[in-house]
Length: 298
Image (tube, rainbow, N blue to C red; front, side):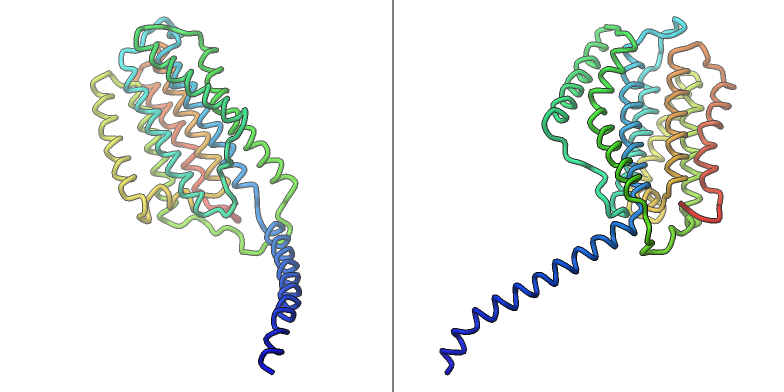
């Protein structure tokens, strides 16, 4: 009796497993469709696209500071100070994106393979070679910096374009969750504070060498404090996890203006205090405006 029941168990188990598996697969398909319909792909596409753009801006500006002749015939006397401004900006960028990755369920990083990987490796090798050559006073045309930046960021740019196409082809039709809540008070304060930080960083580039070096030292110490407290309520990753599209757009504009102001001060004779003050205000303004409350946070 026991043997006959035991002999039938495998058959009945296989039949039940096949039916259960079919039901589970069907349920998984329905859940996948619902999740896809209720997912807003626009913010991840925006973050990914901005990441590629920020890297392009950073690499180009970094190489121009050391390799391109000054536009007005004015050689930079404190290039390391200008580079420190760019380094602070890219460190802030990495912290913010780190927080966004943990908040958004969609992957923001696509693996590089084949020719895309080789193109980026070639770009990185050229970046190191050109930076090393600049130590010996070798100057290059501005177009060289653009070529190297394109090699490094083109694979990321293509991935962001695919994400943008995916966002356009998969609009959120059935919201599974409530709309993104407004920024918390601490996030609004930190966003405005980050704008002020970028503004001050841009303004000090127009200071005399000694003062700008001292100011950048304090800015670095402040940024180090933020990075040490990365897991706190006021940490940059927490801030990036709360940001919506308006904040990322505001950050992108502020970041670009900061780099542009740094290049203008470094390569031209526009080094007056008024240039620094007005430029710093313009840098801080987009991030500050992104904290204003609207009817709906996007």
